[in-house]
Length: 106
Image 1 (cartoon, rainbow, N blue to C red):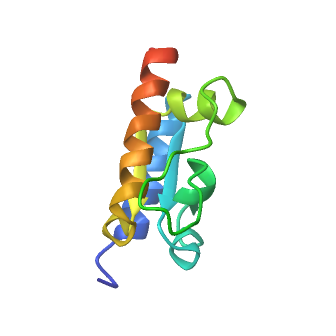
Image 2: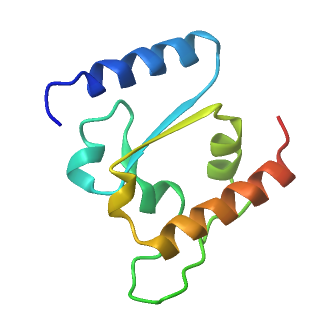
């Protein structure tokens, strides 16, 4: 809902996390929403989720990539409009995050 302070909260979270020399990742399910977030990007680009109609999706994110290290370093991931993404894509991201936690423990 517009005007409830979501952007202000996202900016505050980012400033607090970055002040502690950490990384806050902000993603959105849609491009127009990602543009409103600090350092925002689409979930598909951050988590390398394929954009297709397959009932099963698997992330193309390599756990040894620089992007994976960046994600693993983040204590917080803010995902705007997460209910708008398909269940298979959500499952793909959760699997990727589990693999990242195993490969890059904090």
